[in-house]
Amino acid sequence: MKIEEVQSTTKTQRIATHSHVKGLGLDESGAALQAAAGLVGQELAREAGGVVVDLIKSKKMAGRAILLAGPPGTGKTALALAMAQELGSKVPFCPMVGSEVFSTEIKKTEVLMENFRRAIGLRIKEVKEVYEGEVTELTPCETENPMGGYGKTVSHVIIGLKTAKGTKQLKLDPSIYESLQKEKVEVGDVIYIEANSGAVKRQGRSDTFATEFDLEAEEYVPLPKGDVHKKKEVIQDVTLHDLDVANARPQGGHDIMSMMGQLMKPKKTEITDKLRKEINKVVNKYIDQGVAELVPGVLFIDEVHMLDIECFTYLHRALESSLAPIVVFATNRGKCAIRGTDDITSPHGIPLDLLDRVMIIRTLPYSQDEMVQIIRIRAQTEGLQIDDESLALLGVTGAKSTLRYAIQLLTPASLLAKINGKDCINKDDVEEITELFYDAKSSAKILAEQGDKFMK
Ligand SMILES: Nc1ncnc2c1ncn2[C@@H]1O[C@H](COP(=O)(O)OP(=O)(O)OP(=O)(O)O)[C@@H](O)[C@H]1O
Ligand SMILES: [Mg+2]
Image (tube, rainbow, N blue to C red; front, side, top):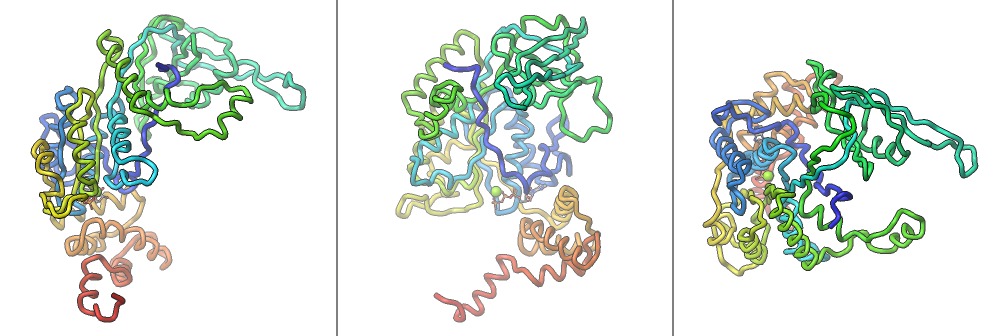
């Protein structure tokens, strides 16, 4: 099994509408603060989320399922993402939407299986020979291109590494320079370079560079102790899916012929059940030997009512397996038919036997004040200025239709304000914009009144 070259396949998330959510906003005792970490109200659900996070961290939750249930726009997705933030980057969190399973190319269960394995982490410990320290200098040395031509190439890199004990200057291969660039290493970062593979890992910024006003989410690490050149226990976090992909990729070198050979082949070779079984076997062996540790993460399935009976059955079985993550579902449906059945209705569109094993967290509608608070936070994150009167007005709109609709009005209102030559959104802009657009409810009302004018 290849471990050295395993690359992360973490999905990039579409969290633009939730970018203000930084965590669950709980105090030390686990009680929710009214407004903290970008979240407002919904205290009970947030506290429940905190309990789940604690259970996951203490590894008592694997193979269980949680359901976030509540009306649209009550913060289910936001809550799930807040839980992901609380879990930190070391615990895998894989978000997906129920409808993702429907594709003409891939089997539904295959999509589910892939996401299951994205949510199971493996922490591999290895003792490696490394060079570690704070970067004090980083100079690429150029020479004439040996292949001729006028260009110059990097012949080697001089890098200075400092630890509490001393400083060492290394002369490194140009290929390491590429890895250094990929990791965006700068002077003042703490890094280590693996002696065998030349792999570079940036651990964070040295804490001598920490400033009070740093807004960026930078991780500060202390100056390493001991020698620059040493044996170090290196910890690598991968997911089972990372391993699947790394082992399924067509093998080949970096010379031109094998590069060409890969062009015509499909990028993604099949990850077969057989391959997965093999990997599970190796993983289990590593776990038994104490080389690796299993880190069950979270699989978040939003809009779970979009799954059909086949998927539910599969999920039920997958939850029983020994390598299972915690599954968090979310839905805004009440009693409805289960997809893929003729007429079996069930609460939330989830079969009763599966529903029986989930713990349900309810999200409740927001009060008008809470909506105003949330809209204000959103305006701040989007960098929009808005006066109190307009905020109150949007709060009313939110209470009448939905929170999401009120939030969506922010950007058009700010555009309108700009057109009218203002920096700050005021009451007139909001009024004008609510006249221009309809929310779902008023549109439905118009349809009901003038239904005969529309095509059937
Ligand atoms: N308690 C909260 N604090 C701050 N922002 C919130 C809160 N609840 C929801 N929001 C924001 O309101 C918007 C709508 O919430 P969200 O998308 O989480 O609703 P949902 O329950 O997932 O709705 P749906 O059922 O339609 O998927 C998002 O931009 C979200 O970030
Ligand atoms: Mg949602």
